[in-house]
Length: 220
Ligand SMILES: Nc1nc2c(c(=O)[nH]1)N[C@H]1C(S)=C(S)[C@@H](COP(=O)(O)O)O[C@H]1N2
Ligand SMILES: [Mo]
Image (cartoon, rainbow, N blue to C red):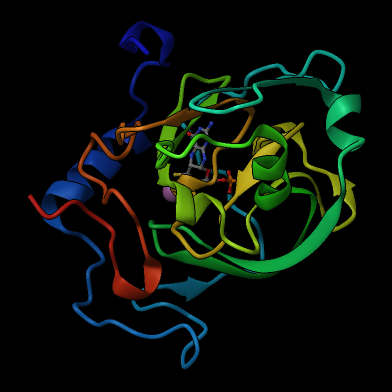
């Protein structure tokens, strides 16, 4: 990934880089999800804000392809019909964005990451996953976080196709981490042996991003 593939920094992108430097929104509290549904420093919203780098790539269900490659026994290259022919599940989960909004009870439908892993069979030394999106965005996850029981590649939200603004036709959902890990407009899933920090992870945001531990920003 070169920076040429990325949109120019928007005002929001510049603000988010400054917030990471300033440690904005940090409360210094930690919590346990079993005891407290809303993570520290978050507030509830009823609507669903749009957050991204400021461009909405034009991807339709017809043009969409998913490329799964790298340290796997069985690389996959699926069109939308191949993708929806895989086992489908619906998971209900909460969204926690690092800019402090949270949204409860989102019903996501699609292919669980565990089913995807069963199909592509990561090699023994594949310990990390990098998500690549159509807007040039990337984000990285440890394999265990990618494989969380409620993580999925989603094509529908509340029974409707995920719209373009929110990352349709297909986006990732990893509910137990801040929402920047949930890549919109999913294009490629790369399995790697060494971790490769993504867009926000190299711009001051935490490598893991656990909302209950308030892992908003990187330590250094
Ligand atoms: N491809 C892509 N995925 C992305 C982003 C992005 O800029 N590009 N932004 C992330 C961030 S910071 C957030 S909070 C959520 C926002 O998703 P939403 O717009 O559907 O609320 O998408 C995440 N996934
Ligand atoms: Mo975000």
